Length: 358
Length: 279
Image (cartoon, rainbow over all chains, first blue to last red; front, side):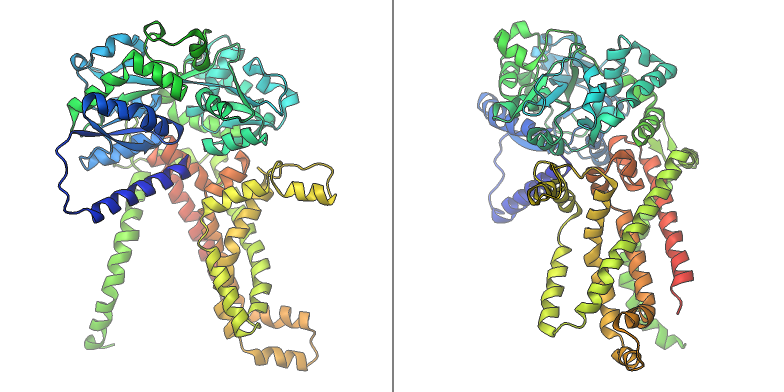
């Protein structure tokens, strides 16, 4: 992810610089445009191919696509830009924990619900408010982290997250390297302790850590770089692990021997929300964009093309049962406990590092 | 020293001093300030004075990581010199054309980034596409196996990264070495190998020491190779700094760890220079 992004941003910068140098005399067309940040890779490509051209056709607003990192990196960049009174994008995706932190630090603009009529399509857990009750973030896409495996190497699809602890799977798992993006504490709590309530207290979290540490001998790679794991999963080098349901589905559709399984305890349902950085200028355009994406038709289109689960009520969309099953599951999902990572940030990060290092 | 002599000297120092001031001292001062910054409840920080981040470092886990980082980098420095020194010694004895070609080739290696090296070695060490398949084909092993992540993989990739630097650092000293010393030793009946150990190595001791320190500091800053080719127990302090700064959004703790890393490398450099550099 990191390398891909560096290359991307370099290419982007280079292209922009070339355009600037080669056409100095062309006056900027007086046409509305916004910079939209989505996660680099499949996400950005799909948005560029499927969503932006229709959005521009429908509203006349040009979209400049920007690849942004997942996770905290992006908040750091927004914050650094805010110190210089800049906004790196006008509207962008933001993940759970950094979103909470950004709201607390007032890095995002408050949004006007009246300018987003489609907001009524979204359930309440896809709307985020600041301490004063102002709307600041709106659900964009949601996705599942599931148990993925290579069909050539693993004949029988795993059925439970508990399979990751099975001694027969020694040294063959790929897991995300950070507590805050793997949600392995939530997975362990749900699989072995009946739910994530045990994570309410430090004592409970310690118990979960103890169980989680038993998984270590089975883990080949603790990955930060999604690309590195996806390659290894497709090759069968690391035949099983947690991965993104949507990306695994796209890889399978391209013919790679990869399957994504919803374990019986549920997949982890994570989501990206739209936020508008404090110093963004085209406010009306940003609202219009958020409203457009919240349309059930667009959400259905995202589900079909990007493999994400809709943030609107699925019954409002024209997704068939099969199409819905491909992006979501009927069972109750495991919901990330963003609050614990905000409350016990340092403590969990130290415990996590110690657990990994043995 | 008279005034009219030193003034131009000072003037010529100004551009480099300004450069060092802007590009080194200011960022360094910011890191120092951040390392003692006060954390706010909402996850942000304010500049102030708080040693909490250094206290957090003082657990066996982080101390052990720091010692491990120093140890593995010292080992890599030793291995790189073990490869680079004999090679460079032979290189100085090649004819001019061969020497130039080799030096261009080695310089070209420096253009490979750590990222590129890490991911290439990941392929080389994989079970499905790596060296294991060659070993299987030749019949040395029964079945191809994965060689990464492992300590050996981290060391191999970092030695690969460091060797060109070591060669380029050793080359000037070795090519300037007085050949008559070797001839004298040979005339007096010392064997070729004996000459190498009794004359060539001692004469180039200061070049060896400064190269090893440079390699040590260079590899201490590696972050991609340990995380891509290593297990969590092989992640160096630099990897943890990256995690804290980028993923955990804790710049003060990341800065505190960076200051510790700096003190660590600074004291190693000082110790080596003091006890190893003198002739």
